[in-house]
Length: 461
Image (tube, rainbow, N blue to C red; front, top):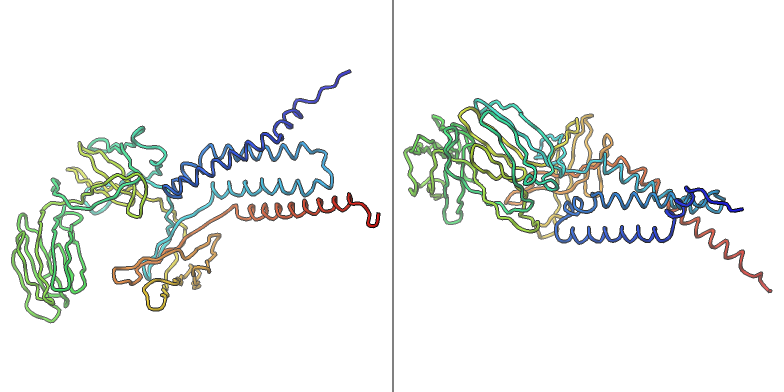
Protein backbone atom coordinates (compact mmCIF):
# COMPACT_ATOMS: atom_id res chain seq x y z
CA UNK A 1 0.00 0.00 0.00
CA UNK A 2 1.63 3.24 -1.11
CA UNK A 3 0.95 6.67 0.27
CA UNK A 4 1.48 9.92 -1.62
CA UNK A 5 2.22 13.27 -0.01
CA UNK A 6 -0.09 16.20 -0.79
CA UNK A 7 1.05 18.34 -3.71
CA UNK A 8 1.12 21.47 -1.56
CA UNK A 9 3.66 19.88 0.77
CA UNK A 10 5.91 19.08 -2.19
CA UNK A 11 5.67 22.69 -3.36
CA UNK A 12 6.46 23.96 0.14
CA UNK A 13 9.51 21.69 0.35
CA UNK A 14 10.77 22.92 -3.00
CA UNK A 15 10.34 26.57 -1.98
CA UNK A 16 12.00 25.89 1.38
CA UNK A 17 15.00 24.13 -0.18
CA UNK A 18 18.51 25.29 0.61
CA UNK A 19 19.36 25.47 -3.10
CA UNK A 20 16.61 28.03 -3.78
CA UNK A 21 17.62 30.04 -0.71
CA UNK A 22 21.23 30.20 -1.97
CA UNK A 23 20.06 31.33 -5.42
CA UNK A 24 17.90 34.08 -3.91
CA UNK A 25 20.70 35.33 -1.63
CA UNK A 26 23.27 35.32 -4.46
CA UNK A 27 20.80 37.14 -6.75
CA UNK A 28 20.17 39.76 -4.08
CA UNK A 29 23.90 40.21 -3.51
CA UNK A 30 24.48 40.58 -7.25
CA UNK A 31 21.81 43.26 -7.67
CA UNK A 32 23.13 45.19 -4.65
CA UNK A 33 26.67 44.98 -6.07
CA UNK A 34 25.45 46.31 -9.42
CA UNK A 35 23.65 49.14 -7.59
CA UNK A 36 26.87 50.01 -5.77
CA UNK A 37 28.79 50.28 -9.06
CA UNK A 38 26.01 52.35 -10.66
CA UNK A 39 25.97 54.75 -7.71
CA UNK A 40 29.76 55.09 -7.80
CA UNK A 41 29.73 55.88 -11.52
CA UNK A 42 26.63 58.08 -11.57
CA UNK A 43 24.76 59.02 -8.36
CA UNK A 44 22.26 57.71 -5.80
CA UNK A 45 19.28 58.78 -7.94
CA UNK A 46 20.50 56.73 -10.91
CA UNK A 47 21.15 53.73 -8.68
CA UNK A 48 17.65 53.95 -7.19
CA UNK A 49 15.92 54.36 -10.56
CA UNK A 50 17.98 51.81 -12.50
CA UNK A 51 18.60 49.17 -9.82
CA UNK A 52 16.98 49.43 -6.41
CA UNK A 53 13.46 50.46 -7.51
CA UNK A 54 13.14 48.06 -10.42
CA UNK A 55 10.92 44.98 -10.94
CA UNK A 56 14.05 42.83 -10.70
CA UNK A 57 14.82 44.06 -7.19
CA UNK A 58 11.22 43.82 -6.02
CA UNK A 59 10.92 40.37 -7.60
CA UNK A 60 13.96 39.04 -5.75
CA UNK A 61 12.76 40.52 -2.44
CA UNK A 62 9.30 39.06 -3.04
CA UNK A 63 10.82 35.64 -3.70
CA UNK A 64 12.86 36.01 -0.52
CA UNK A 65 9.63 36.54 1.46
CA UNK A 66 8.09 33.46 -0.20
CA UNK A 67 11.14 31.38 0.76
CA UNK A 68 11.01 32.63 4.37
CA UNK A 69 7.31 31.79 4.68
CA UNK A 70 7.85 28.36 3.07
CA UNK A 71 10.67 27.56 5.49
CA UNK A 72 8.43 28.40 8.46
CA UNK A 73 5.49 26.40 7.09
CA UNK A 74 7.79 23.44 6.39
CA UNK A 75 8.58 23.23 10.12
CA UNK A 76 4.90 22.80 11.03
CA UNK A 77 3.84 21.69 13.61
CA UNK A 78 5.93 24.14 15.54
CA UNK A 79 7.45 23.38 18.90
CA UNK A 80 8.70 25.66 21.64
CA UNK A 81 12.30 25.29 20.45
CA UNK A 82 11.24 26.71 17.05
CA UNK A 83 10.29 30.07 18.57
CA UNK A 84 13.65 31.87 18.02
CA UNK A 85 13.84 30.48 14.45
CA UNK A 86 10.32 31.74 13.69
CA UNK A 87 11.02 35.14 15.27
CA UNK A 88 14.10 35.71 13.10
CA UNK A 89 12.16 34.93 9.92
CA UNK A 90 9.10 36.98 10.89
CA UNK A 91 11.39 39.90 11.79
CA UNK A 92 12.98 39.87 8.31
CA UNK A 93 9.53 39.86 6.67
CA UNK A 94 8.38 42.79 8.86
CA UNK A 95 11.57 44.70 8.01
CA UNK A 96 10.93 44.27 4.27
CA UNK A 97 7.26 45.18 4.66
CA UNK A 98 8.14 48.37 6.56
CA UNK A 99 10.62 49.35 3.85
CA UNK A 100 7.92 48.80 1.20
CA UNK A 101 5.45 51.01 3.09
CA UNK A 102 8.04 53.78 3.36
CA UNK A 103 8.93 53.54 -0.34
CA UNK A 104 5.26 53.67 -1.35
CA UNK A 105 3.88 56.29 1.02
CA UNK A 106 6.90 58.06 2.55
CA UNK A 107 8.35 61.49 1.83
CA UNK A 108 12.00 62.48 1.50
CA UNK A 109 12.78 65.95 0.21
CA UNK A 110 14.15 69.38 1.02
CA UNK A 111 12.68 72.70 2.15
CA UNK A 112 14.41 75.98 1.40
CA UNK A 113 13.96 79.20 3.40
CA UNK A 114 15.12 82.68 2.52
CA UNK A 115 16.15 84.61 5.63
CA UNK A 116 13.03 85.65 7.52
CA UNK A 117 10.63 83.99 5.04
CA UNK A 118 7.91 81.37 5.27
CA UNK A 119 7.92 78.05 3.45
CA UNK A 120 5.35 75.27 3.11
CA UNK A 121 6.66 73.29 0.13
CA UNK A 122 8.95 70.27 0.08
CA UNK A 123 10.94 69.64 -3.09
CA UNK A 124 11.35 65.99 -4.08
CA UNK A 125 13.51 64.40 -6.82
CA UNK A 126 10.51 63.51 -9.01
CA UNK A 127 9.84 65.92 -11.87
CA UNK A 128 6.74 67.56 -13.33
CA UNK A 129 5.68 69.73 -16.25
CA UNK A 130 3.62 72.90 -15.75
CA UNK A 131 2.27 75.08 -18.53
CA UNK A 132 0.71 78.51 -17.99
CA UNK A 133 -0.87 80.93 -20.46
CA UNK A 134 -1.67 84.65 -20.51
CA UNK A 135 -3.29 86.96 -23.06
CA UNK A 136 -1.88 90.16 -21.53
CA UNK A 137 1.48 88.94 -20.22
CA UNK A 138 0.49 89.59 -16.60
CA UNK A 139 -2.38 87.34 -15.46
CA UNK A 140 -1.58 83.68 -16.05
CA UNK A 141 -3.80 80.62 -15.83
CA UNK A 142 -2.54 77.06 -15.48
CA UNK A 143 -3.17 74.82 -18.49
CA UNK A 144 -1.52 71.64 -17.28
CA UNK A 145 0.36 70.25 -14.29
CA UNK A 146 1.52 66.67 -14.70
CA UNK A 147 4.22 64.47 -13.11
CA UNK A 148 6.69 63.10 -15.65
CA UNK A 149 9.51 60.57 -15.51
CA UNK A 150 11.66 61.25 -18.56
CA UNK A 151 14.63 59.49 -16.94
CA UNK A 152 12.96 56.08 -17.22
CA UNK A 153 10.49 56.88 -20.01
CA UNK A 154 12.27 59.04 -22.56
CA UNK A 155 10.12 61.28 -24.78
CA UNK A 156 12.25 60.11 -27.69
CA UNK A 157 10.07 56.97 -27.78
CA UNK A 158 6.82 58.57 -26.60
CA UNK A 159 6.69 62.38 -27.03
CA UNK A 160 4.76 64.48 -24.52
CA UNK A 161 2.36 66.83 -26.35
CA UNK A 162 -0.03 69.63 -25.35
CA UNK A 163 -2.48 71.06 -27.90
CA UNK A 164 -2.62 74.88 -27.97
CA UNK A 165 -4.20 77.51 -30.21
CA UNK A 166 -1.05 77.77 -32.30
CA UNK A 167 -0.59 74.00 -32.59
CA UNK A 168 0.99 71.26 -30.52
CA UNK A 169 3.77 71.99 -28.04
CA UNK A 170 5.78 68.76 -28.04
CA UNK A 171 8.52 67.52 -25.71
CA UNK A 172 10.36 65.02 -27.90
CA UNK A 173 13.88 64.70 -26.49
CA UNK A 174 15.59 64.41 -23.11
CA UNK A 175 19.19 64.40 -21.88
CA UNK A 176 19.87 63.29 -18.29
CA UNK A 177 23.29 64.94 -17.95
CA UNK A 178 24.14 68.25 -19.61
CA UNK A 179 26.36 71.20 -18.71
CA UNK A 180 24.41 74.43 -19.38
CA UNK A 181 25.89 77.69 -20.64
CA UNK A 182 23.71 80.80 -20.47
CA UNK A 183 23.50 83.53 -23.06
CA UNK A 184 21.01 86.06 -24.41
CA UNK A 185 19.86 86.06 -28.04
CA UNK A 186 17.80 88.35 -30.24
CA UNK A 187 14.09 87.58 -30.35
CA UNK A 188 11.58 88.03 -33.16
CA UNK A 189 8.62 88.41 -30.79
CA UNK A 190 7.22 91.95 -30.42
CA UNK A 191 6.37 91.10 -26.80
CA UNK A 192 9.94 90.29 -25.83
CA UNK A 193 11.80 92.70 -23.58
CA UNK A 194 15.18 94.31 -24.19
CA UNK A 195 18.56 92.89 -23.20
CA UNK A 196 21.83 94.70 -22.43
CA UNK A 197 25.25 93.16 -21.93
CA UNK A 198 27.36 95.56 -19.91
CA UNK A 199 30.69 95.96 -18.21
CA UNK A 200 31.34 98.02 -15.11
CA UNK A 201 34.86 98.35 -13.74
CA UNK A 202 37.44 100.36 -11.86
CA UNK A 203 40.86 99.49 -10.42
CA UNK A 204 39.34 96.90 -8.05
CA UNK A 205 36.10 95.80 -9.74
CA UNK A 206 35.44 94.26 -13.15
CA UNK A 207 31.92 92.88 -13.72
CA UNK A 208 30.52 91.74 -17.08
CA UNK A 209 26.93 90.51 -17.22
CA UNK A 210 23.58 90.59 -18.99
CA UNK A 211 20.46 92.38 -17.78
CA UNK A 212 17.25 91.22 -19.44
CA UNK A 213 13.61 92.28 -19.25
CA UNK A 214 11.16 89.41 -18.80
CA UNK A 215 8.78 91.11 -21.26
CA UNK A 216 8.44 94.42 -23.07
CA UNK A 217 8.02 97.30 -20.61
CA UNK A 218 9.01 95.20 -17.58
CA UNK A 219 11.73 96.21 -15.11
CA UNK A 220 14.94 94.25 -14.58
CA UNK A 221 17.49 95.04 -11.86
CA UNK A 222 21.13 94.19 -11.17
CA UNK A 223 22.56 95.18 -7.81
CA UNK A 224 26.37 95.21 -7.99
CA UNK A 225 27.05 96.70 -4.56
CA UNK A 226 27.96 100.37 -4.90
CA UNK A 227 24.91 101.06 -7.06
CA UNK A 228 21.82 99.63 -8.68
CA UNK A 229 21.46 99.12 -12.44
CA UNK A 230 17.88 99.06 -13.74
CA UNK A 231 16.67 98.26 -17.25
CA UNK A 232 13.32 100.02 -17.62
CA UNK A 233 11.57 103.35 -17.24
CA UNK A 234 13.48 105.89 -15.11
CA UNK A 235 11.82 107.92 -12.33
CA UNK A 236 11.67 111.68 -12.70
CA UNK A 237 13.92 112.29 -9.69
CA UNK A 238 16.51 110.60 -7.53
CA UNK A 239 15.44 108.13 -4.84
CA UNK A 240 18.42 108.99 -2.65
CA UNK A 241 20.82 106.31 -3.80
CA UNK A 242 23.34 105.58 -6.55
CA UNK A 243 21.36 104.29 -9.51
CA UNK A 244 21.61 103.99 -13.27
CA UNK A 245 18.53 103.52 -15.43
CA UNK A 246 18.73 102.22 -18.98
CA UNK A 247 15.51 102.89 -20.90
CA UNK A 248 14.96 101.13 -24.27
CA UNK A 249 13.53 103.38 -26.99
CA UNK A 250 13.42 101.28 -30.15
CA UNK A 251 16.94 101.07 -31.52
CA UNK A 252 18.12 103.71 -29.04
CA UNK A 253 19.11 103.20 -25.43
CA UNK A 254 18.75 106.16 -23.09
CA UNK A 255 20.34 106.44 -19.66
CA UNK A 256 19.94 108.38 -16.42
CA UNK A 257 22.47 108.32 -13.56
CA UNK A 258 21.39 109.42 -10.06
CA UNK A 259 23.59 110.08 -7.02
CA UNK A 260 22.74 109.55 -3.37
CA UNK A 261 24.72 112.66 -2.36
CA UNK A 262 22.33 114.92 -4.30
CA UNK A 263 24.50 115.76 -7.31
CA UNK A 264 22.61 116.59 -10.52
CA UNK A 265 21.59 113.60 -12.61
CA UNK A 266 23.51 112.66 -15.74
CA UNK A 267 21.31 111.92 -18.78
CA UNK A 268 21.75 111.04 -22.41
CA UNK A 269 21.91 108.25 -24.96
CA UNK A 270 24.45 105.45 -24.92
CA UNK A 271 25.54 103.27 -27.82
CA UNK A 272 27.26 99.90 -28.06
CA UNK A 273 30.95 100.18 -27.22
CA UNK A 274 30.53 103.59 -25.59
CA UNK A 275 31.98 104.01 -22.09
CA UNK A 276 30.42 106.27 -19.44
CA UNK A 277 32.03 107.62 -16.28
CA UNK A 278 29.37 106.93 -13.67
CA UNK A 279 30.83 109.16 -10.95
CA UNK A 280 30.65 106.36 -8.38
CA UNK A 281 34.08 105.47 -6.99
CA UNK A 282 35.72 105.77 -10.41
CA UNK A 283 33.45 103.12 -11.94
CA UNK A 284 33.19 103.12 -15.73
CA UNK A 285 30.12 101.67 -17.44
CA UNK A 286 30.21 100.25 -21.00
CA UNK A 287 27.38 98.88 -23.13
CA UNK A 288 28.81 95.83 -24.89
CA UNK A 289 25.61 94.70 -26.61
CA UNK A 290 22.09 96.07 -26.89
CA UNK A 291 19.16 93.97 -28.15
CA UNK A 292 15.79 95.80 -28.35
CA UNK A 293 14.06 92.40 -28.36
CA UNK A 294 15.87 89.65 -26.51
CA UNK A 295 15.30 86.31 -24.79
CA UNK A 296 17.24 83.83 -22.70
CA UNK A 297 19.25 81.29 -24.66
CA UNK A 298 21.00 78.20 -23.36
CA UNK A 299 23.59 75.93 -24.85
CA UNK A 300 23.91 72.43 -23.45
CA UNK A 301 26.89 70.12 -23.65
CA UNK A 302 25.97 66.49 -23.20
CA UNK A 303 28.16 64.41 -20.85
CA UNK A 304 28.13 60.74 -19.86
CA UNK A 305 27.84 61.05 -16.10
CA UNK A 306 26.71 63.62 -13.51
CA UNK A 307 28.96 66.24 -11.94
CA UNK A 308 28.21 69.21 -9.65
CA UNK A 309 27.73 71.29 -12.83
CA UNK A 310 25.31 69.00 -14.66
CA UNK A 311 21.53 69.03 -14.86
CA UNK A 312 18.91 67.38 -17.05
CA UNK A 313 17.21 69.08 -20.01
CA UNK A 314 14.25 68.56 -22.34
CA UNK A 315 13.74 69.66 -25.95
CA UNK A 316 10.49 71.48 -26.70
CA UNK A 317 9.25 71.84 -30.28
CA UNK A 318 6.71 74.63 -30.84
CA UNK A 319 5.70 76.68 -33.87
CA UNK A 320 8.45 75.21 -36.01
CA UNK A 321 11.30 75.90 -33.57
CA UNK A 322 13.21 73.77 -31.06
CA UNK A 323 14.04 75.00 -27.55
CA UNK A 324 16.01 73.29 -24.78
CA UNK A 325 14.83 73.78 -21.20
CA UNK A 326 16.95 72.68 -18.26
CA UNK A 327 15.50 71.23 -15.06
CA UNK A 328 14.13 73.79 -12.60
CA UNK A 329 14.06 76.49 -15.25
CA UNK A 330 11.34 78.46 -17.02
CA UNK A 331 10.85 79.03 -20.74
CA UNK A 332 8.62 81.79 -22.17
CA UNK A 333 6.99 81.45 -25.58
CA UNK A 334 5.60 84.61 -27.20
CA UNK A 335 2.93 84.18 -29.88
CA UNK A 336 0.53 86.64 -31.59
CA UNK A 337 -2.30 85.22 -29.47
CA UNK A 338 -0.77 84.63 -26.02
CA UNK A 339 2.29 84.22 -23.84
CA UNK A 340 3.06 80.73 -22.56
CA UNK A 341 5.29 79.78 -19.65
CA UNK A 342 6.63 76.24 -19.50
CA UNK A 343 8.34 74.95 -16.36
CA UNK A 344 10.17 71.65 -16.06
CA UNK A 345 11.35 71.02 -12.54
CA UNK A 346 11.30 69.08 -9.32
CA UNK A 347 7.89 68.39 -7.84
CA UNK A 348 6.83 70.42 -4.81
CA UNK A 349 4.62 68.92 -2.12
CA UNK A 350 2.40 71.28 -0.10
CA UNK A 351 2.65 70.38 3.59
CA UNK A 352 -0.55 72.26 4.39
CA UNK A 353 1.12 74.56 6.93
CA UNK A 354 3.83 77.23 6.99
CA UNK A 355 7.13 77.26 8.83
CA UNK A 356 8.82 80.61 9.42
CA UNK A 357 12.60 80.97 9.58
CA UNK A 358 13.21 83.20 12.59
CA UNK A 359 16.99 82.94 12.76
CA UNK A 360 19.93 81.18 11.16
CA UNK A 361 23.40 80.84 12.69
CA UNK A 362 26.66 79.58 11.22
CA UNK A 363 29.67 78.62 13.31
CA UNK A 364 33.14 78.60 11.72
CA UNK A 365 36.37 76.83 12.48
CA UNK A 366 38.74 79.24 14.16
CA UNK A 367 40.66 81.36 11.69
CA UNK A 368 38.79 80.03 8.62
CA UNK A 369 35.56 80.60 6.69
CA UNK A 370 34.74 76.91 6.77
CA UNK A 371 31.43 76.18 8.51
CA UNK A 372 31.75 74.00 11.61
CA UNK A 373 28.06 74.08 12.54
CA UNK A 374 24.83 75.69 11.40
CA UNK A 375 21.33 75.81 12.84
CA UNK A 376 17.91 77.30 12.19
CA UNK A 377 15.26 78.61 14.54
CA UNK A 378 11.82 78.10 12.99
CA UNK A 379 8.35 79.02 14.21
CA UNK A 380 5.51 76.54 13.75
CA UNK A 381 1.84 77.53 13.20
CA UNK A 382 1.16 77.14 16.94
CA UNK A 383 3.54 80.05 17.62
CA UNK A 384 6.31 77.95 19.19
CA UNK A 385 9.96 78.37 18.22
CA UNK A 386 12.15 75.31 17.64
CA UNK A 387 15.90 74.96 17.17
CA UNK A 388 16.95 72.68 14.31
CA UNK A 389 20.64 71.79 14.31
CA UNK A 390 22.69 69.08 12.65
CA UNK A 391 21.98 66.58 15.46
CA UNK A 392 18.76 68.15 16.76
CA UNK A 393 15.86 67.53 14.34
CA UNK A 394 12.34 68.88 14.74
CA UNK A 395 9.44 66.42 14.80
CA UNK A 396 6.16 68.07 13.91
CA UNK A 397 2.87 66.60 12.63
CA UNK A 398 4.46 63.28 11.75
CA UNK A 399 7.32 64.92 9.83
CA UNK A 400 10.98 65.12 10.81
CA UNK A 401 12.95 68.24 9.84
CA UNK A 402 16.76 68.03 9.77
CA UNK A 403 19.26 70.84 9.22
CA UNK A 404 20.79 69.75 5.91
CA UNK A 405 22.68 72.69 4.42
CA UNK A 406 22.62 76.42 3.67
CA UNK A 407 23.37 78.83 0.84
CA UNK A 408 25.60 81.89 0.96
CA UNK A 409 26.47 84.83 -1.26
CA UNK A 410 29.84 85.68 -2.78
CA UNK A 411 30.92 87.40 0.44
CA UNK A 412 30.15 84.33 2.56
CA UNK A 413 26.96 85.67 4.15
CA UNK A 414 24.17 83.07 4.53
CA UNK A 415 21.19 83.75 2.28
CA UNK A 416 19.05 80.64 2.77
CA UNK A 417 18.65 77.67 5.07
CA UNK A 418 17.95 74.22 3.64
CA UNK A 419 16.14 71.58 5.69
CA UNK A 420 15.73 67.90 4.91
CA UNK A 421 12.12 66.76 5.42
CA UNK A 422 11.32 63.10 6.06
CA UNK A 423 8.12 61.14 6.57
CA UNK A 424 8.65 57.44 7.27
CA UNK A 425 5.30 55.64 7.80
CA UNK A 426 7.03 52.24 7.89
CA UNK A 427 9.54 53.25 10.56
CA UNK A 428 7.85 51.50 13.50
CA UNK A 429 7.28 48.34 11.46
CA UNK A 430 11.00 48.31 10.65
CA UNK A 431 11.87 48.95 14.31
CA UNK A 432 9.59 46.10 15.37
CA UNK A 433 11.08 43.79 12.77
CA UNK A 434 14.62 44.65 13.89
CA UNK A 435 13.70 43.98 17.53
CA UNK A 436 12.12 40.63 16.69
CA UNK A 437 15.17 39.63 14.61
CA UNK A 438 17.49 40.52 17.49
CA UNK A 439 15.44 38.55 20.02
CA UNK A 440 15.27 35.62 17.62
CA UNK A 441 19.05 35.59 17.13
CA UNK A 442 19.61 35.75 20.89
CA UNK A 443 17.17 32.88 21.31
CA UNK A 444 18.95 30.81 18.66
CA UNK A 445 22.30 31.23 20.42
CA UNK A 446 20.66 30.41 23.76
CA UNK A 447 19.10 27.19 22.42
CA UNK A 448 22.39 26.20 20.80
CA UNK A 449 24.28 26.69 24.04
CA UNK A 450 21.59 24.86 25.99
CA UNK A 451 21.74 21.91 23.60
CA UNK A 452 25.55 21.84 23.85
CA UNK A 453 25.37 21.69 27.63
CA UNK A 454 22.82 18.87 27.50
CA UNK A 455 25.01 16.85 25.15
CA UNK A 456 28.18 17.34 27.21
CA UNK A 457 29.21 14.36 29.40
CA UNK A 458 28.73 14.80 33.15
CA UNK A 459 31.67 16.20 35.05
CA UNK A 460 33.94 13.59 36.58
CA UNK A 461 32.85 10.82 34.24
